[in-house]
Length: 125
Image (tube, rainbow, N blue to C red; front, top):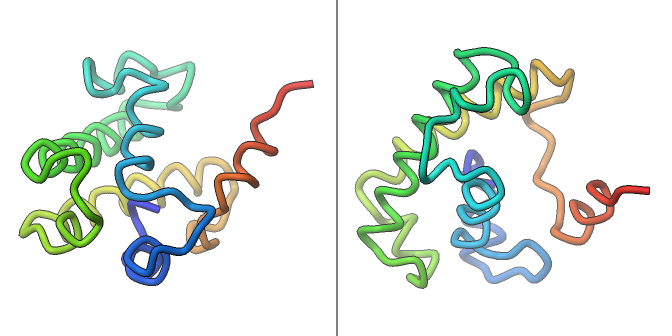
């Protein structure tokens, strides 16, 4: 979601239900992992395969968080998308996404899944 500008315009900006918004995406990225408190390097071997994956994720997280702190966590989607640093944040997220998807054998160009689908995929038996 954070790495796909078309998705951001066509879903978030358009207010399509079922996907949350940019703030939801940021919180899903950092709250479950505490990436807002320490480096992704801490998760090499558990979440990330190597230091390169961790470094790419760190770069993306820091850029997105910097913007979130500047516009405010409850800012409308347009405030993020119009921020001067947003294209760099999206590019950093895309770099991380491509690396992670390749490592998982996934297609990095697969459209983001809805929150409902993500919830189903992450359920444990």
